Length: 225
Image 1 (cartoon, rainbow, N blue to C red):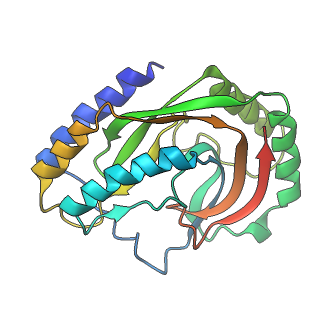
Image 2: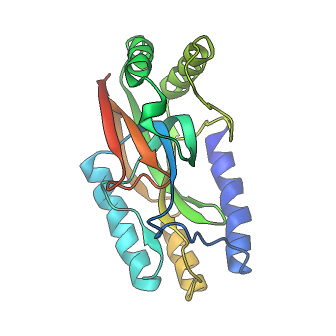
Image 3: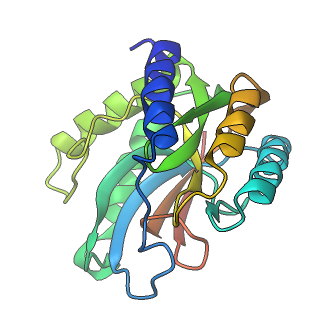
């Protein structure tokens, strides 16, 4: 997969939809009754990178204050969604230690790697920071796929889509956009902005809600690479 092409196609198609008013708003973001939970391996960007993301988000918030902006605590890259969020999933349903053991075995075979956050892309429902990755990340993903396929552990890897990118969602639309052109102009301004390159030294295994909000996330294990 050519990531630059993938992000560009996503950007042009989504911006055209947003501009025409064909965007999607998410009404579950503020719900206390959202029971969709999952089990995920995530990567957190470093503080300097998150600082630059917040610089962009502050400008976006000045244009569209009613939208949903990710806090530093919630910004993440999904390394692998082991159990995709679904209504009613509970940690009691699985034996966490078995998952930790399998993941530990996989990660032990791989070295640290870097991710570059450069530019923005969009979907019809959110704005994303583009992540560019080394081969190592997808090698880890393939290794995890094989490991879980050969186990009898509950998982739903690749059920929604086979993850191949390293993006981070930073804005979600939760209500009607008031200043569409101004927001799209700002996104265009940051289209190729270099948010930073960071070394991935740790991976977190978390029990999470759909949005990876700190108030719901339970950190179960931190793996050092």
